[in-house]
Length: 96
Image 1: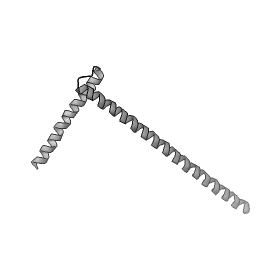
Image 2: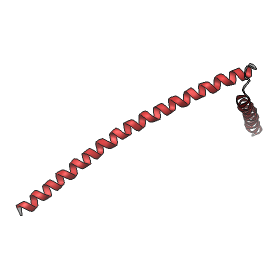
Image 3: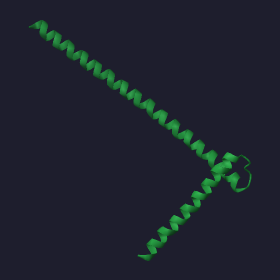
Image 4: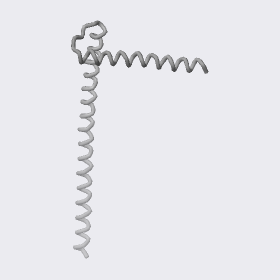
């Protein structure tokens, strides 16, 4: 009987140790994923800054690259459509 209780105790201790290790692993993985997410946001922010810079050049007529020109024209078109939609929202609000 004592042998059985010793085995149960050892098993419980092993399980608790493994659970503790797993928890530590999950915490560490969570920290690393958080760092990855922060770096992805930093990269996205830098891409946005590049885009804003290029679009500013486009507005000044300083872009010669055809791909960038096409993308800037698409942005301009989207901005015009957004302005129209915002006006429709205002018109709708005014009519009620």
